Image (cartoon, rainbow, N blue to C red; front, side, top):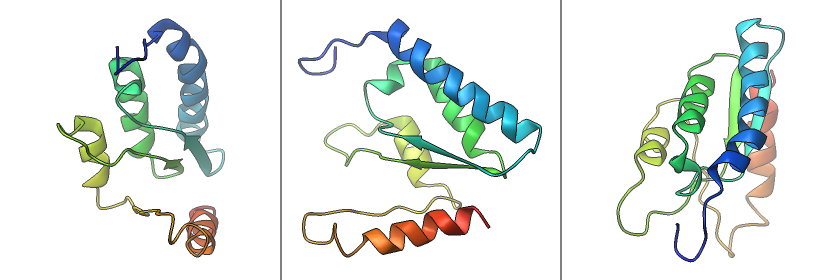
Length: 116
């Protein structure tokens, strides 16, 4: 349980892991640069050790990029989230109500730069 929500780990892994595995295969074969979008890397998702491993493997690849959301820390930090935030090759955008429209072009440019 995460708050009032139950975590259906089997269904989550059945949906998420094949996608991340396909990304990993593309990366290993160096076919092309790959952007993987993950919404969100948070507490529920971290119940899956397989998901954690797949995200770490994808982050460690030179030709794979994760465009994802991570939660703002509220209480005890989440280990994978902290690892991601502390990586030198990760760029964090703090999006607020005040900047959400203005920051969009900066995010689009960052994604385009990943594809170069």
